[in-house]
Image 1 (tube, rainbow, N blue to C red):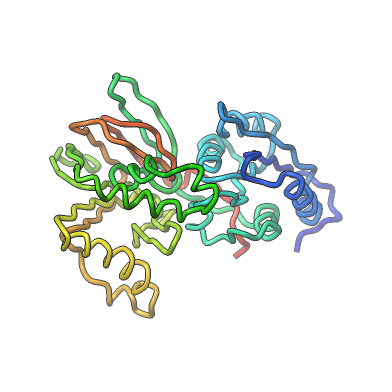
Image 2 (cartoon, rainbow, N blue to C red):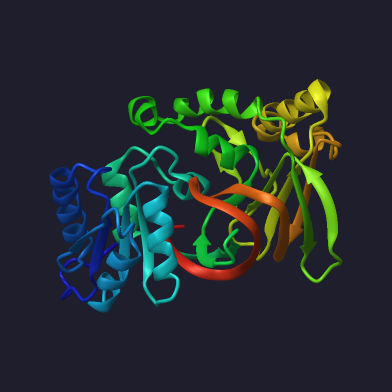
Amino acid sequence: MTDTTATPTRRAAVVYNPIKIDLEKVRAAVAKAEQEAGWLETSWFETSKEDPGQGAAQKALDTGVDMVIAAGGDGTVRAVAEVVAESDASLGLLPSGTGNLLARNLKLTLDDLDNSLHVAFSGDDRAIDLGRIEISREDGETSKHSFVVMAGLGIDAKMLANTDDDLKKRVGWLAYVKAIVETLRDKNQLRFRYRFDDGEMKSIRAHTVIVGNCGALPANIVLLPDAAIDDGVFDVLLMRPDGLRGWIEVLVKVFWENGIVRRLPRGERLATKEVESIRYRKVAKMEATLRDPEDIEIDGDGFGQATGFTTWIEPGALTVRVPQA
C-alpha cells in the first residue's frame, strides 16, 4: 500500500491533446490520483498541430519528471513514446482516442478515467519493445520515426487515406467501414523487394505488408495473433489474396480464427496452419524497396507515401505503467 505520509518525491507531467480530452475533468482526476499515490503536483504540456507531442514531451522531461502521461489518441501516444524512450522516465497512458492501440494491446481499461490514472500513479513499470523506422520518399528525402504498435502499407494505409475525418469524429472506428469498402475496390498490388534480418533480398507482389510490435485492433480484429509486445522481435504479415477465394481465406483467418477460435480453450490447436493468402514471419529487422510510391501508416496515422523503408526493433526500450502484479 502506498505510504502517503512520506514526503512526496516523484512528479509526473501530462502531455495532452486539447481536442481529445475534457481538460477540466482530467485535471481534477489527476489531482486526486496524484494525492492518493503521494506524488508531487503534476505539470501540464499541450500539443498542437505543429507539435503532436515530441516537443511537449521533451519540455516535460527537461523539468525532471519521473513519468509522462500521454492523454490523447494514438498519434499523441506514439509521439510521446518516441521521446520518453530516450529517457529514464516511464510512460503513463490515458486512452482518449478512437483506436487506443497501445492501451488495448496492454489490456488496459479504455473508458475509465480514474482507473487509468490509478494505474499510472500507483502501478508498476513494464519494459516493452519499440519499433524504429526510416522511410524513404520519392524526392530522395528520408524521415525517422518510432512506433509502438505497427507500421504498414497496403490495405491499412489506403484505408486510413480514404477515411473521412469528420465521419470518424462522429462515429469513431465505424468510419473505417466505409473506407474499407473503397479500399477493397483498389486492385493494385504492392510490388517490392525486401530482406528480413540479414537474409537475401527477395521480390514479391502482395496486397498488404504489416510490421507489428503487437497485433490487436478495434472491433475484435487480431491481425498478428502471435505478436508479443516484449519478445524482442516483430511479427510481419504478408497478405496476398488471389480473387474471391483468397479474400475468404483472409476473412476466415483474421475474424474467425484469430478473433474467436484462438480465444477458446485450446484454441491455438484448433486454428489452421498458415494459408496461402496470409503469411507470418518473426524478424528483428526488415528492409523494403517499392517499385512505386505507396501510402504508409504508423500506429494508425497516415505518413504520406514511401518508396521504401527500413525498420528495426529495440527490445525493452520503452517503460510503460501497467497495473500492479
